[in-house]
Structure formats: structure tokens, C-alpha cells
Image (cartoon, rainbow, N blue to C red; front, side):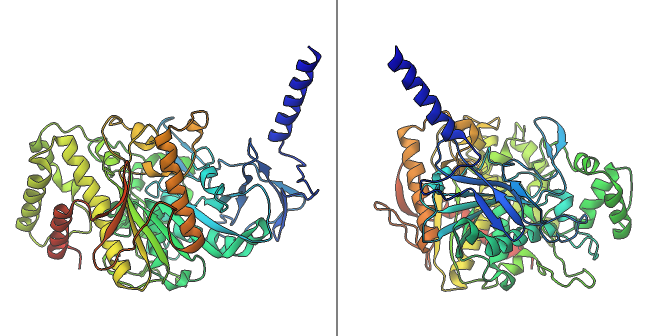
Length: 543
């Protein structure tokens, strides 16, 4: 009896020390959770099983004025308790049907191995997706414990979204793209501060998914980012993604202003409207029903800044179809996509017949195409209908069409351009693994559709809270082990590899590492359909 009581007490004592998040010293008496930064002292914590140190919610910049480049990071006296891992920028939370978030939201979360070493750890900086209108660096979703156990540091960042990050009016007071410049501010902060946490500022890999990958592609194609990162990983995104660039940003702003009760196209009037409206009202006005229109929420995205008077530091000065031709930074790149990306967008459509699709096809045409005549437009629609809706159900046709037009083709063009314009190594992947961990798909109404949806690959690299108590199946564990080994070996050496996997970089012909039930090199998937898009782009692509 006494022995049982003693064992219970020992267990409770051990558990207490495992979860204790204050005044934790390592074996040698060194406090590894308190960091002295130029901003002030920061105190972090261990996770439950002491597998990583966490410094959550550290501000890297300050929002001093709406629609403007962020200011310097704040300073403080005393100790900043870095335990707020779920700060959110202003956005609409559709599940609760209400706006959430805050304007001064520029924080980052830092996760490190549990102990310091004499050598600095390589750093992976993750930029979340979400169409530039939703998402965050939340620990509940992007817990990088799988990556950190491979002895890297992972930093996840927030950036302003929607109108707050991408109101683009062609005037100095609202130049656009400040959300992208938030990301650059975070990368600069990391260069200046990551060594305090044991990270190597000379070994930084940027890793983005969807809008995060689009952002990274812009950074790759401008020399102003040189030295901020040394390798790049782009999951399911490129600057050519049609939903993630605005050719007519003032019209989009005017549409949202109309919902706020104003009717104008004048940039200065629009500025006053957005300045004087509450954050919640702006977020509410930017939300729309996506039924039969998956792109109704993409009002504020990256734009051209060339029209901005006296803008000293424009980031995007050309359209994506021109930017993509630049040689860009000479850094190694991983770029790829999932086999059924389009599930994410197709879920919003309830068309039952091909005739319904044809009648509404105008809203499905990607904006990197521009037709000089109605005849050309009709020809494209006829060809697309024939390819995607002759042999598939309507919903499967939409899935394949969105996969190709929104992700596969834009990413393929990006990969080819990156391969041709530099001596960099470019590694392509094709993720087609399907299991219960394909979380993004299971959140859609098409959850039982086979394949890997947009963003599903992330949940084999991060551990969302929903899976924390569910042990991975043997097959899932094998995919997690393979992907984390590939991603982290790339972050360490620039060459993604494991003891059993050889990933060949692409040369003249694109080759892909298939990540699924088989791990093997394959040629470009869906080559005939990609050739259709290539020919279409040559005929009708924006010049």
C-alpha cells in the first residue's frame, strides 16, 4: 500500500515537472527558457513532454497605422511571458459566423529543440496560407513537433490579411502589399534575433503553403530579399495562382465599400471609408457566400505598386506573367502540389449538369488568360468542357479543372522558370497520400472523395491539436517520418534526402518525387492536360 502511494507521488511529481512552465532549469543550472533580446527579456516554456521549447506570440513589428508598412518592434521592461500561441489577425471566422482577430497582430512563434548546443540550429520559417484573407500561425494548427525533433528551429509568423494587409489604392496612404512587407519584417527580425534562441541566421529556409508559397515566390523573384533566406519550399502556390493577384484592386475595394454603405471608385474617398470603418465592419463587408463562387472572398490580394506616388520601396512592380520571367535569387527550391487540390474549391459548387457549368463558366476562367474576342473565349470554354466534363461527373470535373488551372499549371510554370533561369537546384513533389490525417479535405463536404486536397500535406509535417491524442497509424507514421526527414535535410544541406529516398532535381524535363503509398520518382503528372494549359497560355496568356 505504502509502495503504491509512493509511486503515485513520484508520478505526480514527475508530471508536475513535465508541465511546469516557469523557472525551469536544465541539468547544469542554466535557464534555457529566459532569453535577453534587444527588445527586452522573453520567457518561454516547454511543451507537455519537454520535446521542444516554445516562445509564443513575440511581437516582431508594430502596426502604427492602417494600410501602412509596420513600424519597429515594441520594447518592454521586465519579462515578456511568451505563451500566447494563438494570436490572430483580423478575419472572418465562418464557423462562428463572426469577425475575429486584432489589428496589431504581428507576432511570431518560435519552437526550438529542448536543449541548447554549441552549434546553431538550421531555421525553418513557415508562412501560412489562406488566400491572403484568413489563417494564422496558431499553435493549435501548426505545432511543428515533428520537424523540431529533427534538430531544427521552426518559426511561424502572422501577417496582416484582407484589406488590412492588401488594400491597394495606388496612393501613398494605401500602396498595397503591406501584408507581404510584414513577412519581410519578420524575416529581418529573425536575421537579427534568432541566434539568441540558438538558431543560425545564415541557414534559414522559408516554407510556405498556398498564399504562403505565393509570397515566397515573390521573394524569390526580387533581389531586395537577398540574405534574408537561403532555401525555399513552396507547397501548392506560385505567383501565377489566379485567385491571388488583383488586376483591378480599386474595383474590389469599391465592392466592399458598397457593402459599407458607400458608392465610389475614387481612391482617396475609398481610403477615408476604410480608415474610418471599424475593423469588424470591414471584415464583415469583405465576407460573401461562396456557393457556386469559390472566389468571392479574394477581394484583397497582392497587386502592382507602380502607380504609387513617392513610394520608396515597392515590392511588386510588374504583373505576375512578367515577374515570373525574372531569374531571381539563386537558392535551392522545393516546389510541388497534391493530386486533388481542387477539392478545396469544388466543394462550394452544387451544379448538377454540364449545361449549368457551361452557363457559368465565365467565373471559372483564370485571370492569367485574356481573350481578344468572344470567339476565342468560346473556343477555350468548349475545349475545357470537352477535357474536364466529358468523362467525369460534374463534381469530379470541377475538382480536376480547379486542380489544374489554379495549382498544377501555375506551379509547373514556376518550376520550369526557376529551373531555366538559374543554376539553382529545383526539387518537385507530387503528394497523393490519403488517410484520416488529410484534415483539410475532411473539413469539406467532399470528405470521402479520394485523394489529397489543398493543404492536406501539411498535417504530416505539423501536429494539429485535433490529432494530439490520436496515435498515427503505421502508414501515417511512415509518411510523417519520410516528409519530415526530407524537409529538414533540405533545410540543413539544401539536398532533400533520406537513407531510403533519392530525390532527383529537375533539369530540362520536370521530374517529381511521388509521396504516397509509393515513394518514387515520376514524370510530370497529367501531361496531356498540362499541354492543353501550356497551349492555352501561349495563345491567350496576358502579355
